[in-house]
Image (cartoon, rainbow, N blue to C red; front, top):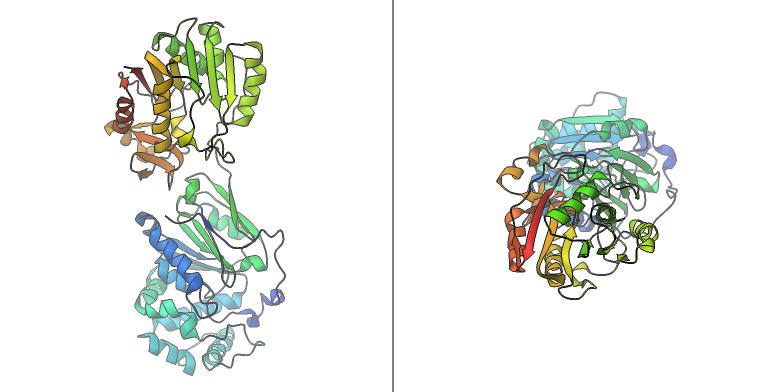
Length: 500
């Protein structure tokens, strides 16, 4: 699978100065060629971009909106490689936009690679204004190796080398330049207008060239599910930032060194304040524990992923303080609150901080979840609850946790867990699901809200039941939820299983 970020550059707080910053609006500021992977005439940087395109999920390649954020023919090879269904070229220099449009016309009127290059060399095509006269002369000089720095910038390599990939696929490039919807804008990447044009667009594959040498910028992308930012900061130093792991949650993308992105949508972690007040969700869960799991006033219960103790406060209200309650969670803030406001006053209520690595709740923890042994003896608990836990855990972690739950349950003890279960009925809902429940990336046993098993997870029902049965836990009839927000918070599907 493609890597989310490919970079070899240390963080930079300010854009480096550049020798040609002052000529962005000048005819001499036009760059003749492309810089998307042939910096030294090799194929090195371009291979990273091509490999990324080749390795993504096939459907991501079907509807690409290619954006060259800076400069005339910058990204021409990438355009051909990525085969977009929509193209937008931006540049702050109007002469660079004129250069792009002129080359596009020459390409469209040429029969093959040789014909095209010969026409450039011999100025064998019409122009429409004075700017194009200058550009036509410069292209001929470039072809002869005589383009001076005073007239335009360029690498020493020829256009045949610089545009190598596009010229090798001449007819494909011609079709893209003539048949695909295309727009050119004279705008800078740091402008509000640039940000406004991209904010609500979908399927954005953006080439930012080496713009971070000159200026930093940031903009919002509302639909990052199939979005990517790529750049060659310096020759040989590639920065590739895949935004797809954010799913459908809007992001703020920052074109810096290195490029970064941050979610500006709803967090996967519920943004709730702990409270000693017994809420409907905690009370309803506690009633389930009493009535469905058979938990009595002197019973023992384990709360896996206990958070700040929502269930614990519900148990106090519905069953009483005589219970032995044990809970653990990797989320520091909630566990510390529970230890102070719950466990400190109730000796039989114990809450542990478990330093378990988790993408959402414990990104900096080091304890491998598939090797985490629950710190309790075999057959100790009458009941185990895992509410709103498995939607954050990978299948291999789920399997390990079920084995541990079966180990610490006594014979006849009961296990209660919530899931988003995928079956014939619930699968029909998926196309209409909204953030944060946009389950659109199937991956074997689960379907996720972000690619590469990131985000929230919905589990195949048959797989869940198989794992429970394999570990000696006999499933009972499932209580299916609506998956929609409800007052008591119990909108997921609930599974109860008894240890044989």
